[in-house]
Length: 377
Image (cartoon, rainbow, N blue to C red; front, side, top):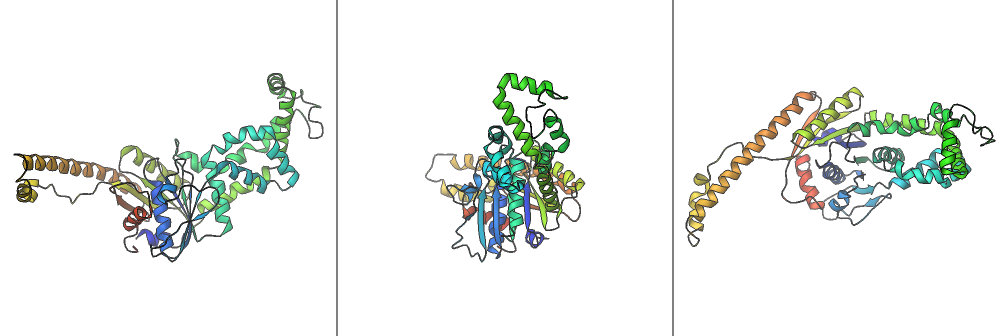
């Protein structure tokens, strides 16, 4: 089954895998190919290196969708791109979850919120799921392709949807809010089980900080239901039949280990995973060739005006390079076989060879698409 058949009825594709395996290029190439097939596509990236911007020939783009000019690429659809702006995404999230405009304003202007926001928005995995939910829920696109950020811990992305819901969990909020009530913030400040903590904070940072901190937790307590609802909605989106996780890996041990992790985790969580894309493969014809036999006569003819033994030295170097390439291809095949034994019959595997040069424009993405979608290119 071709990748085109796999994603034909999908509305959301999530590319996961370790860093440096080409997730950005794969996401952009899939989006471009889908647009060439007539679909309205958005590629969303959270990659801090902004490689997707380079791949699409853009100098800059941000939290607003930017349409990509596909003139000359025989595309009947549309391709849009967006780079996640984490701070703006979180502010927009507060505006959606806070039902009362006064509550929204109080949170956004709270100095504790403003101080910790940089830490919260630095969690790219969580911000990715929030922005992804808004984009998919808008139903503006036939297909959304997410290029997930490189993760130190592969579990971070799958665990991220519930992070804020756990932060504002009522049991946690109750512990912080026990020293006071909403009407009299400082009336019972030094009473209750958490009084020691508040007394210490007040001594270190002062009464004004303690007031801001108290109001911060009071306001966030009221957002619990909203965050919980979004958490469940994101989980439903991840398990929907129109969603698919595509694992992107490279034929080396560290990348394959991460790919194996994702295969197991997605299966346990019952999240749809249609297959694995193995990128950057070294491709050979499967034969060890003798350059003297293949090129010897031609090399001798071309080297007539050069120093003695130039042709012989060239053939020796070509032979050594060819043997190393064959050995590397054989080693990579062992990693491919590891994944083949792990995936089910319903899951597929697609290989993309290592291309010469960087994939930094639409022409390069088209070449990647030729390998991902050979029957539709």
